[in-house]
Amino acid sequence: MKLLKFPSLVQQQIFGFIEFNNLLVLSFCSKRTRYLIQSLQRYQWMNIKFVKYSIDENDKIYVSVRSETINGFFILSPITPKQPVITPMDVFGMGPEIPICVHPRYFGNQYLYDKEQKHLVVHGIHDYLYAFFGSSIDYEVESVGNELPPSLKNINRTCINVPKNTTAEELEACFTASPNQEYIEIDGHFNGILSTNSVIYGAKHLRVYFKGNHGDEILLRFRGARLQFHSTKFHDSTISQFLKEWKSNQGFQNLKSLSIGSDWKNNYNAPKLLKDIDVKQLDQAEDIVHISWQMSCSYYRPERLFSELPSKSGKVGFDYLIRDGDGEKASVFIEDHDVCFALWKGNSSVMETIDR
Image (cartoon, rainbow, N blue to C red; front, side):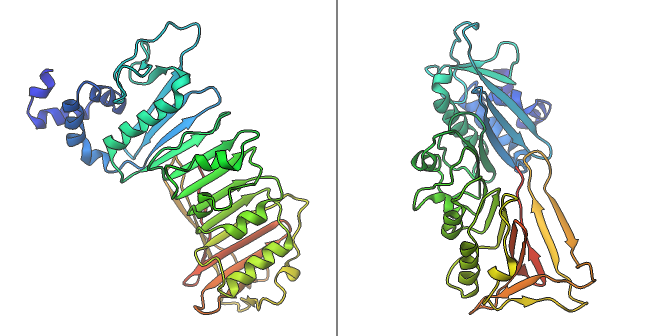
């Protein structure tokens, strides 16, 4: 290949005119070519934010690579009876024995593969891209199909649309290779039941969409920093237990925020829940609670929003607790079917949400 004989400065300029998807295909030519691309492009790739693998209900695999300057995206489609048998190519370092090839019509943007080897193909792509980009970026898995996703190493964030009749053990197996994740989102036909010592309880940020009666168990066993529930039912006694354990410094030392949005039929009695917990209240006109939250979205730049929330009377009426032992403060808001809890940061209360 004549490209390999050019001076490195010329090679770098040439690579600068080639789109990411085509550079990826070029890297399949040889190990030398791959290492050359990695070496000359590493400074541009330092700003990559994430690599995301999405698997839909039709067994299509979507791979996104995003940064401020890179908008890489390609699809792997399963072969159909109408298509001829594919001739395997040595792509993504998987060797010709794996049934995958570049689509003849959509060079670099689409690949064909045998869906019977779907998990093996996803593993191969992830291993190749992880070696290509390194460990400094987020690797994400999103499954919206009828099957659970494969368990991949070095995954930071996982979003799962749980299929019907999925057991706790089957769901747990999705996190075997990457037990310590920054963000986990569970949706679909999730029945609320997790393994007793599930690694999901230890996610830094856990978001659960679940219409059922097992929210109590997840809340009381959660070991991470931020927890969100959508449409989930809770017993009043569980919320009261949570507040008392946090207040007495007997549990939830890692928790920074909790957000509960229950079914509209599930209303919470704030005076009853806050009874005998020594609740403080901001009642000075000059006191203002600053609520800040951060949204991180896979397709847009992260935004940071700030808002001042005075009450209608001009005074802030938020209740707050002071934790025994260390004096940590946290705002508590309970109204109708919503419960919000957030630690203070200085004179602010921080509630972080992550939208995928």
